[in-house]
Image (cartoon, rainbow, N blue to C red):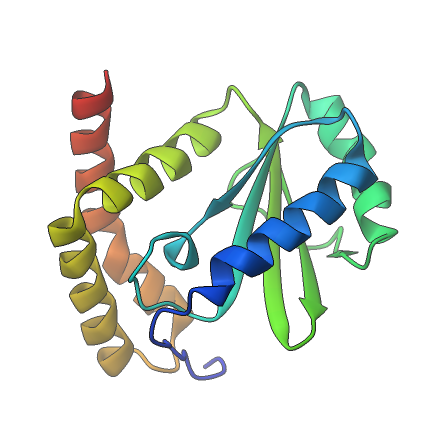
Length: 172
């Protein structure tokens, strides 16, 4: 059992916070970061979300991922080398700043992980009806699995895969 899952109403400050943090990350990583993107529900206007800013950094190679870690630690991110990753070529770091939690992911910009997260985000931004459907799904799941993050996440997976497939078709 984990801490209760809290979903908050959309907060436009989430995007502002991301933009401020993106600038800090760009300065820290210099030319290692090819792109820094806001992903997850806090990146979709109008979407209710866990108050966690998800950021993905696209880099050129796996070696570049490793080079980013100490630079991000210098600006307050915490890397846990014992953390089990569900994607083998991804590194995750966390940061708590002014009451805001940030999950940061570093990946190869040519990876499936990079592509799927941007496809899903962009599709939800473009299709408010689908975003509302996803919002309703999350609200229902949090009622069922308020203290079980794994079950909550698993409950979203079919929907996410279906939307990713639609997005690939629409954007190809």
